[in-house]
Length: 136
Image (cartoon, rainbow, N blue to C red; front, side, top):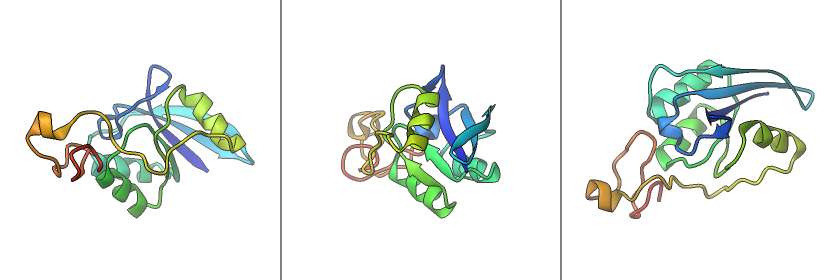
């Protein structure tokens, strides 16, 4: 298993489409065997899903993530655990222990598209939706 976490200052970075780096964990027999930081060349959900797929990541733990990013990850065969906050290392250990607190209904909560962009439904680097809030 290979797990990726959008990473900033030891924490789960909260906006997938703007992730500047990921912490990658190699897992064997339920134990972390290696970890490293990987920096993507691009941003936006399509580029990031491709980047993670190229690293052979099969699981992503993240904070906020829009519907377009969720679809791109699903197409890449990457299992998603979204809506996670706190320390990245702690989140991975919790996932391995079966105690990770995540949301199957995760949405990007970075900003209100109606106020900031005039309407929703646009893809803003992984933050897309149609209900007046990101990922709606």
